Length: 173
Image (cartoon, rainbow, N blue to C red):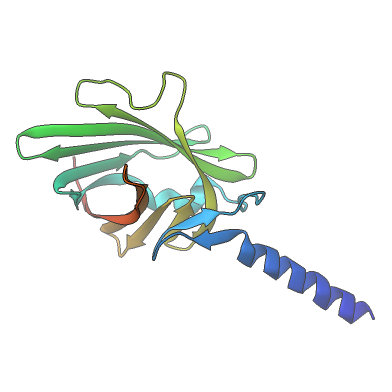
């Protein structure tokens, strides 16, 4: 009887873990409604620290992540086209309770914000693996010591949702 109860509890726990997320696209997950983010700390993702350069969405992209300090990592992103600055963003990944959340604010080239003054886009943690972190709608994947792929699920104005891949190389500033 005792073994049956343990097996039932284990099966329910595994089922909750499996159903806490759903796949949006090949590399991007979403946290299911009423699910909670798994336990994690900034130490689990310290491998994203650095300056990264690459190309995506027909432009040059740069992303920089600073080391954790007081429960937060700060990041910047900028995208340019040939002789044209497109947009930039400020990000933070912070420890929220016993988990992580990424928050992002976007700006046009002239510093006009995309989001309202006191608003940001929040990406709760979905799952962490050794070299991969899944936020709701964004996945970061470390490949070797000097490559980083970021996958984003982007909803376009016409209603279609598409996964976009940002491929970066670690560089020195």
